Image 1 (cartoon, rainbow, N blue to C red):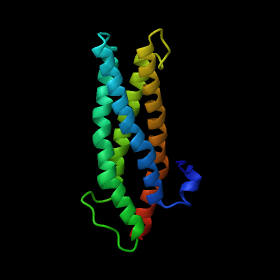
Image 2 (image 1 turned 60 degrees about the vertical axis):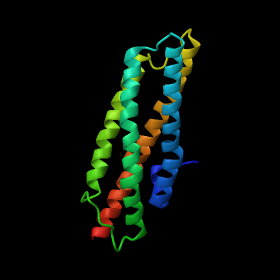
Image 3 (image 1 turned 90 degrees about the vertical axis):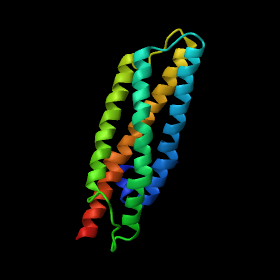
Image 4 (image 1 turned 30 degrees about the vertical axis):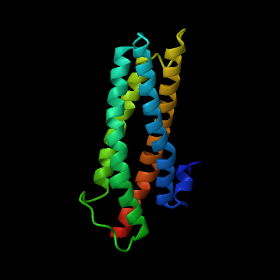
Length: 172
């Protein structure tokens, strides 16, 4: 599914953008996390553990991402869709302004970016090696890294600014 550019987003419903993010990026992230965990485990099972620091960094990334995706899918995204669906009658929220959860998501996105940078550092930017298992692991980590960067951009630079603008318009 092709997601709209920043300029095109204003022509689309935010609900459609959210659906695209969930179906494309959230689904990919969950699949990639499972696949990478299996790659790390297979290396350990083969008696050839992956670099411990890289595994710890990935485990922290995974521990951050799973609840982050759930907060977006269960709280923030449904609120944005409800706000868009009935702007004349904005939904009640437990978080006050939508700026509050968006601010928290941005903080969490920054932490994910830090962890991705650490993974790149620990893997020498996912550099090929002479080990097939390491190369498969690095390829999977690179794919996750690339997708997460696009995912974060779509939310921070496209979806969230439009949602904030929508909330301001409904408050007027």
